[in-house]
Image 1 (tube, rainbow, N blue to C red):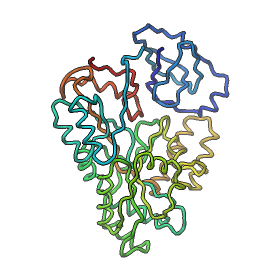
Image 2: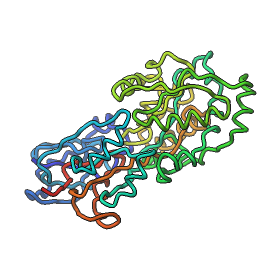
Image 3: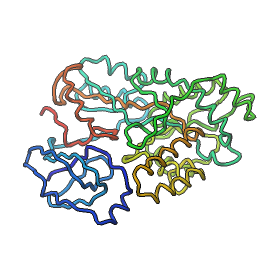
Image 4: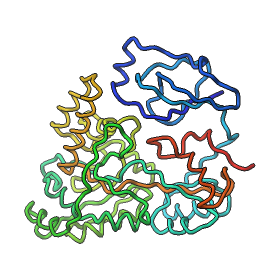
Length: 388
């Protein structure tokens, strides 16, 4: 069995439009495949709209999603067995670090906050960042007239209250990247925007203008599990301008289950949700999921975005679609409907058994495992090699 790992993200005309057209198909057996070896080339067809590898029978035909050329790699898996363990909750990062130190784990993710300095200082471990998407704040049910976040000035005050530079230092030891959009930089249609301003005094002024001269009481701030310390730091920044509240935490499945229902997952109209928008493909994919009225996972329903989304879906012109995607991103940022924080570096670390060998800063070849664009994890897993 061989696998194909796509090395670029598809964009351009929507998949359903392309699939209905008279497009060519490629029989994978026509590619040059050497058993146990690696072949590279270009491919004018692609079935997989995401970026994780798709196992294919060498005889399987793959239908076209885009007319662009794609690099591909075909070879047999380089590992015999892959074991994935979920180690989260309070103290999860410390447990993951201990697993790396004892050799029980070869790879662990998500090191941040107080644990990250220990990872960076350990000469036996090698680490890498994986910039994928920004942390973002949403306001569930902001569209309701009795929500404090119905007023743009309140949403803007939240953004102005956050000291992103300090947050990046405390959470990531300066590794995180400042960014002005709520969608990450790896998309062809993403719009690069100015960095958000930090101005607590202006935040207080806006709250007073919006009718909250004595500040505002939140029902809750919901942190992204398991990044709970970051939630506390956000609350401290908000409290400094008069926006008071406490954390409401969930375990991972609960958090994701509620978030998957979008604004319908939350009864409160005075809650801030910390999230991250990871969707493969193009930036417009994140808009469809989180910022269109019809999406079950949406936190944004706005008639201006709906009008442009309708135009986007009707267009088959790649440049026009890019412009419409960027126009929707601009509306979301200008109206503070989503508040970007910084690009999550999602620091990973590997133990000494991971090949190629070497202690940091030597042995840098292990970075190859993070070469797939838009992938939060080191795909494809079949590329990994470890010492027996």
